[in-house]
Image (cartoon, rainbow, N blue to C red; front, side, top):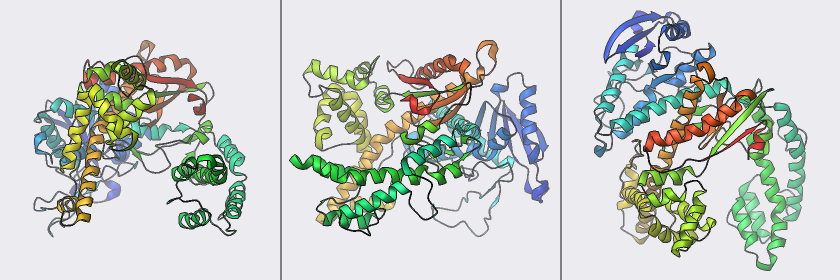
Length: 591
């Protein structure tokens, strides 16, 4: 059963305070009963439907955007099993429809902003798509004024999306993609609501130990100030501001440090190429590298970050589902896509609770093996580290890929388009061992170099380059423009080469989390939902928080869910998705 919910027709309730919402039941593709209620009554309505349903997990809620509607339900203690996020579906189908070979006939009915944020339900203002607008950057026609997206608009948008999926040649995959993306939107909202346990006292102690006491506003922490002064003396500039890249670069060059930037890897490379003087060079730049490390801690996870992002003992990561063009998640600030090792000890489980940290190993190379059907690459990773497996094959066949570092460099180079250096030299050896896998990424690169589009396993479609790209690539009137043309073509090829792999890995991760969530909700003994919940996610790692008594069951769930996600996408492909699972009290102890 589907239930579409959204604002009532604005003409019946012009006063925002009195605005009504309506729910439309859809069964067997036909609209059925409707129910009208005030926005503040939405949680009660949804809760009542779930309580009175014989199969509440089979009810799929259709709404404009999970980010706009679901937080209010969660705050009221109401959660749902499934939804259809129209904003996310619109973005996926809209991009897919631009590639004719996808065979997708879709045009949006309303333009929905997927990033409207975790707001209480209210009236959703979105403009109609103007049928007379022939360009993305054309202004709407004068008669076309913005209007309220009513529940009837949302129903029409759902029907348009549903038809587009069901009539698509790859409807099974596309259906799974939209379901996984919508499931991801529920998970993201729930993780924001639940929050990652965070001990502010331990965090402040870490800052005090590394930076010194919290400084007055506008001043550096004490240890950073000491380092800044010593760096200035070392470089012969007592008033040097090491926070200024331009000023620091001039001082380094004047002191004989021949680098073109102040980035860490450039400084390290300068030191390592010092020959017999390498050790003294490392000692010379050590204070600067230390300063950079402390500066990063201070600005990314310092006292201001702690006050802004941690409340009530929780870090609430505000994720943006599909925020990256490949389908990876992004975040509304707060550094949610990475928690530095330096502050991980502040992530502490509540009393009588534990953190379950599950990290998937070498997801993208394993995804490549499954997508390409390269049996040799799949076998290389069965029951072992994939790069070790490649090295074993390399030694047996007399290839240059004889050790793990070489295998890793070669495979990552193939996926990211390396053409020079050690990776470029090793890729041909990899191609001889795993021709199907390398052929897949090279074909994707060729499409990109020509300005074409590629798709992930489930059908997320890469965007077309803009017109400026095509103009630049076609301009070969001078030697300089020809060189620029080649560089831009190769860059686009590297993008599409990685898009198919990274995007499919993101799809696997969503299916993995979706299966974890389903099993947590279906429960353990007696069918009662587990109290453990997902609280953090970054690319190929999840963190769960729950009672100690559930730890063994949760570890089994996350492990089995990884395999289930692989089967859901790739059937019986002989590809393992191994995990490293740790049950800990502190996030710092997980690795």
